[in-house]
Length: 134
Image 1 (cartoon, rainbow, N blue to C red):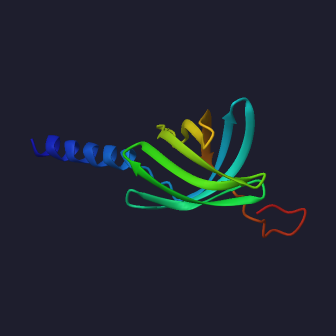
Image 2: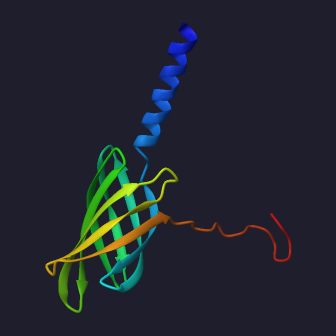
């Protein structure tokens, strides 16, 4: 009986940890909006259910505000396109592998598209001498 209860508690704890993924870090975002594909890098900081950070698109940086609730994620930021402000609004789901996918809306134009995101793998500079392995 005690073993069953302990097992149940561990399963619930593990499931809870998976349901609230950590989003802090750098993410590579691939957008497909009205047939126009683009890539950007966003850096997120998660504190509880609050998401902040920045996204760099072309020459413009936007400050991110958003929320995460279970595996549902939303964020938005304002960027500049040819001198006009645009608000990009992302609505997503985190998959079991830790990737993100969903829709993106561009306001004030009401144009929508899809996007995918994955943690950005930044490579550490090698400390080995040239021609040797770490």
